[in-house]
Image (cartoon, rainbow, N blue to C red):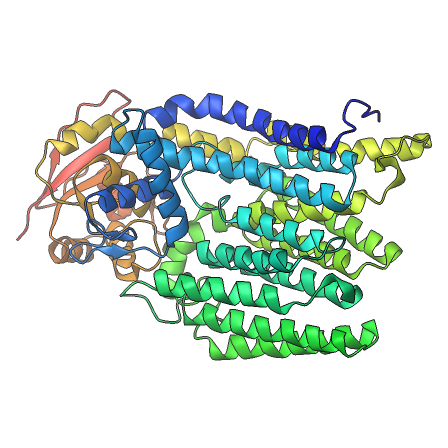
Length: 593
């Protein structure tokens, strides 16, 4: 393992970013033409663009008047990501792009910039106390991480990578305090952790890990500075977020998916735990006793938050009706467990488990409490990623930190050149190639498994109907309400002037229920006709592939599939569409009674 060309800190830092840039180049090259044509791989990207185009016309940045007709739909997404895309689009507009194109490239490029910045901050964190070789190995691990790449690509105009950047910045501030304590840096770490929570409350476990990491450093190394500054930064940022970006008018004041009273209470209680950690440290308690005090306080405070916050114990889908969980929530792909396929288990679980165990081993060997925190954090995200694949990208960040900082203690990764046994060198090579080896394993499983989720996902994408094919014909019709699946609604809103009943967003419970009750209705279609009348539906759009409708009833018997089979229903008449593709879209006009 010779790294003689990479002995300078700056050279290693740049090379780490180059690794990620090369990984991004491949996906960017293959997706560039699609993005240029306004084609994206998920509904969220379309919906984000619809919101921003509405904002350009004077609508609130998180409100869509054409969804959930006639009321409109407030979305839970917070201000920072949308505002950043909006500001960045002004730069692209300087080069002559219209608003729509400028927003596309602003959103897409922000995701790529976030990936590069995330890599830079992780590399900087490891370089602050770790070794050059460990930094490069970690950069290669991140560049070949599938959960990270899933969200970190040109076709994703979402906050999933953007929200990780402030966490990585907080980690850099916290880890650097081990060697060079700094008051301003501690305060900035709190601000960054609060910003991440503002961007998305799903970063809460990451924020907790950063706070516990800083407390562990303080408990074991009292000279690293007091914690109240980080607590002040965290609390101040969340308070500012609540004042600037409160919950939407239709949301609960205790909303858990947006900055609200729930998160003000959370950071207030978190700050209290940090002050307790400061107190026990200044009173010269031995580490085990001080740790016990802080741990018990944290558990009590956590229980208080769960008891006082409405819905906190209900889980991610706990506030949804059981009917909606069955027909909608449980079908969302990014909320499915990694255990649903062997290739996902390899890609989602290997890195956090290996990184977590490595960190715990070296935490025990070196008696480092803070490294143990990172190890436990990585294993926590192995569990969370196992439950919901959506958590895989966040798990990749924690795992990268745990991996890079722990392997820095391996002699074979030391900065100094020295002779090592063949066994040690082979172990080092395997760790360096951990990411690529996972990729090869995933490819092997996919090739050997005809029922692979990845292959099926590609088949579904090829079989899916393209709204872009029929958008001009839809736009030639007078603006109306179109009944279609919630997964098709976002692109329909983006490409046409029509309205929909529900996109894929959980605050619109009534709209989602109306859509699924109508599309899954059976003869004599009374429920479907009731929804058509209630929502003043003018047209019904169905795809003959039928991939969007999940039901335990006979497939041909439900309303959506009945129409997809070109069967007749009174007061619903077909409209001929000319399509460049295989003509799988079917459009029907609904006649109101």
